[in-house]
Structures are given as structure tokens and as C-alpha cells.
Image 1 (tube, rainbow over the protein chains, first blue to last red):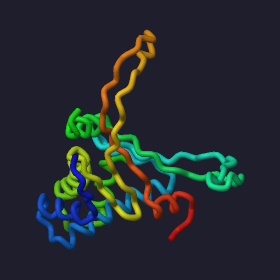
Image 2: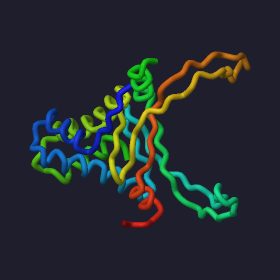
Image 3: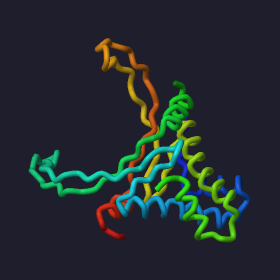
Length: 100
Length: 95
């Protein structure tokens, strides 16, 4: 298994290599893609990228939580969480690439 | 929002780029993430979130239709953890 961590820089490097824009513009475009996905999700929209996966926003109800260290009860407020569901293609490629 | 709508938005903001280049840019970004995970690497996008690979142990599963026990092999699955900034934005806290 690899143990590298890729960042925005690696994604912009790939755009630079594949599309042939300047490094600076490639970096801006990566940022703008992430920004548009974030904006849609923040507005409560589902983002579905075919053959990659689906990001969706779910509402979680309020509940009583517990501080695991002290055992104290603490209220957990209702909140929105993001879930990512990988596509079949992504699941298959990740499984195959990691020796399964 | 779907992939083609994302492409349209980026194209709208970048009238100097060919549509096919915008498609290539968006596709390259998602493809690069899948390739990294397929190698067992992580992709960490500060503020947005991090993609990683989690190992699921082998287990005995059950065919839900027949109730029959089946051996499920160990496998690697993609995982996404939302970044703090995005999690806050979802809850109306603009940084």
C-alpha cells in the first residue's frame, strides 16, 4: 500500500500536465472546482459526479451525548453532516488497486 | 449538481478556455483522486476534506435472500472525511 498524501498541489500538477495551462491557472481551477462543490453542498444540494461518487447532506437530530472521559451528559445539537458514497467504479478500482 | 453542471459553471467563469479543456480539467481532478486511492495513497484537501482507503476485515456475511452464510473477503474501501471548514459551512458558520 502506498503511504503518500496528495494535496491540492498534486491535483494542480496533474491539470498542468494534462491540459497544459500554467501552474498558476491550474491551481486556481482546482480551487474553483472544490469551491463550487462546497457551495452546492452548503446550499443543501447533493453533488453527484458520475463514475466518482455522490456527496450528500443529511440532517442529524439532536441527542444526548456523553463525555467519554467524565461520563457527563452533554446535549448534541441538531446538525448537518456530509456523507460521501463512492461509485461502483471507484470502489472496484480501489479494491483492485489495493490487492483485492 | 451533477458533473456536467459543474463543468458548465467552471466554463462560465473561464470564457477564455475551450469547453473540452474545462471537461478535461474537471475529469483530471476526479481521476487523480481515484488513482491515488487505488495506489493506497491519501488525498488531503484542507478545508474540503480527505479521501483515504480503509481496510475492511474478512467476515462471514449472509445472503439476505436465502439466509445462507457466505465468506466475505478482506477488502479496501474508499473513505471520505469532511474538512472542518466545509463542516462548519454546512451548519451555517461562515469562516
